Image 1: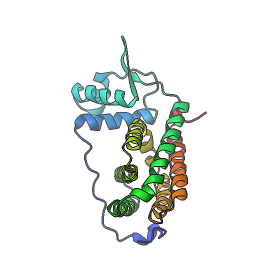
Image 2: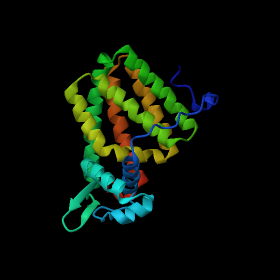
Image 3: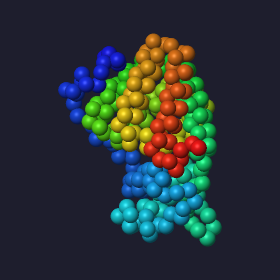
Image 4: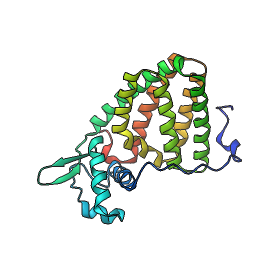
Length: 236
């Protein structure tokens, strides 16, 4: 497949497979609540009342309670005595620093993956890249987010360094919500796809320098795009 081929030339591609489930009801509530936090619907320091949230998401309090526990692990939610769960008071600077660290770690993973990935892993990377093109054509942000996640995981695991993999996955988990919100903008999906194209071509060409540079730039672009979605987490 020609990675430089324009999106408009592939109008006959098959429809996107619906995004797979990420778990039970608590996971769904957690994902929706995390998006609301990232988009500024709930502000830093704001109390997250279980009853109010249950009514908002039309579920019982049990999945809300579990979702809050999950988000506490990521650092998006904090527990305060006498107040219960509140939106964590992350600053734009802290988010910038997490994206910066993620950029360096994923870029290092990419640099090693260039020479260590198996042929099956390279084929999978190309396959996911083609699927992401289809998601853009259908304007399916959820599908693109799922594919994007798997795309990056193939590269992370492709470095075949357990220490780097653990570091990358841990930090990725903390900023996954902010990475996901950038795809609310169709233009950003297209830009992300083009950035991926350069990375895939460099991977297949065994170009270590380009892979490192472009993966790092890609993560910094993701941070800028996420900041534009919500002024709450924008850098000042």
